[in-house]
Image 1: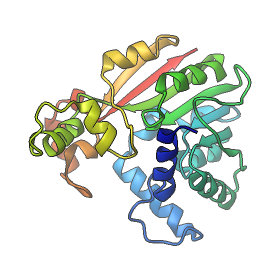
Image 2: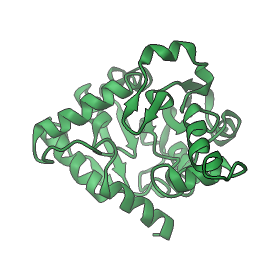
Image 3: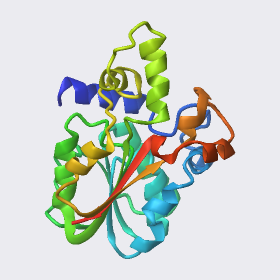
Length: 256
């Protein structure tokens, strides 16, 4: 494992996605309920893109499943689920969560850049806010293309470089730090979540997913764009007055 990939793993092991600030026992059902509740409150639009109910009886792979917040929903909807994550702690928590909800334990510690699955195995490959953390994002996308069935679909969320979150980061770590010419790539890589995090323009994303057909890219405004402090968010209704193309999430949907 490269030094960067090891640093990414350690970061998400320390605080698996969605668990920060939730002071409940990891062995308590309320712990997972609190994670889901906060996720649903902050990102209610996930269901619109994941379309959980569409995949009943289908083979679904989630690349970077974290503690299983979305994977559980796919399982409850009747999908035949497989989840992978680089973080051992996340995998452990996701397995425990699926057992508590009566799902299977098809969760594995694996690298998105080198998946062991056969070609064309999955009807739907889903990855929400993950691939911008792996060092070789292009390779991970190629792997997703490989394991998706012909005619299968994908849904991937990546961070948007031309967003209000990016502006917040530039103000804090660029302008106010006396470094107004510091690049967004450098700021994201060193100051947003795990080391090496990336953000992309719509044009970059379109080229990255050129192997897929009928690609649709949607920009999603998020509460993070309206954040005024770490866990403080402006009222959601203010989003009506903000251009949607400044949203932090780029959601890529397409077919193989």
